Length: 358
Image (cartoon, rainbow, N blue to C red; front, side):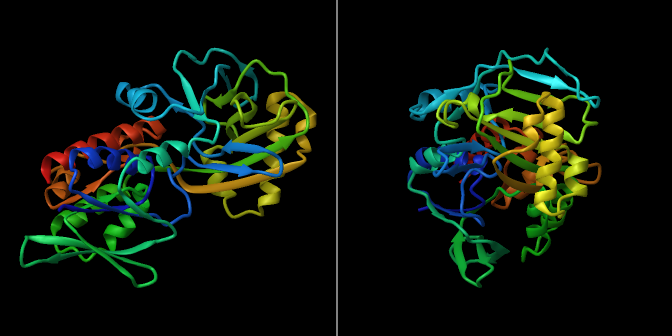
């Protein structure tokens, strides 16, 4: 039996687990997730009192990868999948909105939200998932029967493993922190840690704004193309079937990286009010200044703005070098594109590689 440990239950980890469940049928997969949810920044919340469902992190799944399209439309049950048909328009620093964003690709979610992707991928496997379990220490230990094994220690002091193979799915800065403290006596540890630490990230602070009226606009989303505005993205959750009751509106307003970093620890009520003001100005409706219900969330490490350097001048590819020792990093930061489809595609790649190499 092959034992596989996975840190983090993001989209890439879910895709890798899906592959391993069939490609390595004797594998015993254990996933340790620090939060109470699945799918990482592809996050969904519900407000049952108001009958709301909203994707407040990643907003939808694009059809940019043929394998991912096949996965979600053919392999997984597509029941409850919804497609946003309204286009994405653009705005610049001035706040002026214009059309022109290519809308040829599909924009998918689910009636129950984007987290359905990870829930369905994990749910179709025999993997064991432990939520609210934060890994504190990665330890590589010698064994009598094999060369070595991986053990994980969580913040409660509980040990998990030993594992033949370890997959590490957190964002690059958090993966670098884990590697920094890892009990792994190998030069590969430091080269991988340094490479992960160098991946640039953008913070995102999100406000969710509900209104008891319908907005009449020809677009689903607005994206800031010059990255000079305080707001980076606005979307209308009512464009997703089953997310918002008829006659109501729910805006997801995501601040730009600089604003999010500067105001990350500011009173959330002040941030929500400021983002509502920006939304009212950009959308052109002063009623948006006064939402009747709000929610919010911040991500310090939301979107990678580069990829891990796999061709360092002073050594070999740290990702490959780590894989040869049984540790695989995966996620959108490894793919070099901060999008849900990229994370899923990278997870499929890593799952296939592990299956070949175990």
